[in-house]
Length: 609
Ligand code: DMJ
Image 1: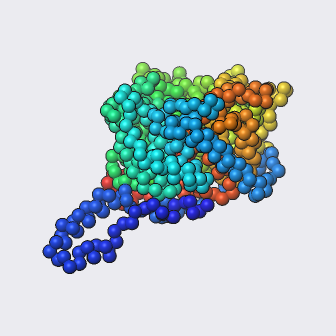
Image 2: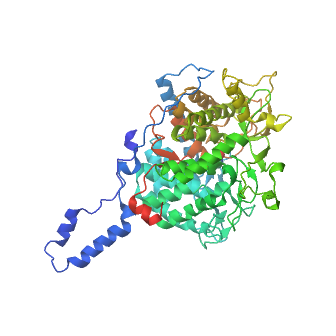
Image 3: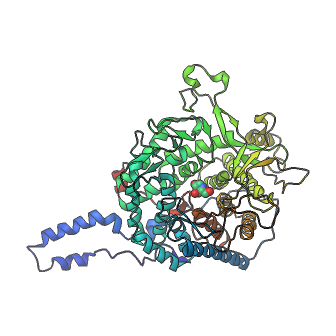
């Protein structure tokens, strides 16, 4: 396994040595000057691109993860043996081969396979998104032949859009560029870096808006941009390019990549948002917040990830970003975490954030935006009660934060408890269903008075009363019965082969060492095998709560199933820690990017303070 990790550099071109330079100059005393200058120029100009990346480039040593106490699990699964886990990881690898082979035989090089009909979907640029998204999973699983074949196709790509075609910036960054960069970091094949650099350059004009926030879509033929249906930049779109562009800046030495990504961060600092309550929409012209919705679901999700992960990726050097994460996560815990009335399920919802009436002092503070106008007042939220599968990445993020941040003990335990309780609820939404697969969106039952369901005050009360038993939201009520009811209704009944719950189980397993997360992941994988597998791939489910043995499926196999869902399952079941969390961060499409340190030259060049 180790041989597939950085360090085995079979692709890097040989760089000229001093010996080469001496033999070049020997016997030519009068002609050496122009040759030497040329040599220096080549090294200066191409250095960052052709420089072979050594193990050290990718393996900056961080202190080992901090061990912290966590609550004993209520459910102790029979522990599977090492051989069982090996077999299980092998089955996930087989599932990947089944999906990729189906794509390769029926849909290659279109974007995605229609896994029922064998037709194709060209829904993400028509550049073969499945190839790019699946690339690093192939490497991690040791599927070298598929990998080499895919690289050949990628080498020929030019990324020029058709006339009148616009490609979505966010999706292209996280799936295509993230896929290329990660596969480059793992394999060090320079073709992947060249193509990432080409794509990075072609997408960069998306930032050429009045504010510097990226436009929704771009034509790489004309550099024209296009606003999305909101006309605004979603928070997730604004802050889900920094891992990719900053790593690309590190690899190529190009300041433009760093500056454009950092401009978005700058707007976040300048917005002076109250308590890190970053709203879901931002005005693309002015760069200011344009609504008052606080969420970790659609429109916002990955922006939360990129706060913590940027700080981690650059070896914890960009501390201003960490502070944004600390503020935002504190506000999530305070305003967005609720429990349900009967089963006490902990969930995360979204809320319209308003200033309490008593604290509205004048017209200027009544703005619907969450921008702080200097007052120290806090906001309070009206929860929607919606709990999205997309939000199930949050437990993993909170656990990663609890593990890596230097938090006071009382805060650390809050982050970890929130992570455990939320991951458990994500699990329950699967376990409650007839198929064992979780719905896309739930409507959670609210208390008659919303604020009675807020999690934080309940935990504070439990602490005051002597901390008896487990904290609220972590008491693991078990699968719904007729007596308990579910405490929620299903709002969207589909399972779109999404990864978020499994992603969190994987991080929970790695950060707490509790095997229950592996067992739950295994149960989900078996349900995927039973209900989603088709003759040539895996299909999304229409209704996760249908009683028939074969639930109805959709003719769709999203590329993230190969990039994320199967990768996290494989990593969850593999004993060896292939992608150690203190050496890598996952972008929001599960593409691992190595943790690195800015060099002194880069700090000067990119003006990193
Ligand atoms: C993936 O494309 C990414 O994880 C993205 O951030 C949002 N969710 C989808 C999969 O559900």
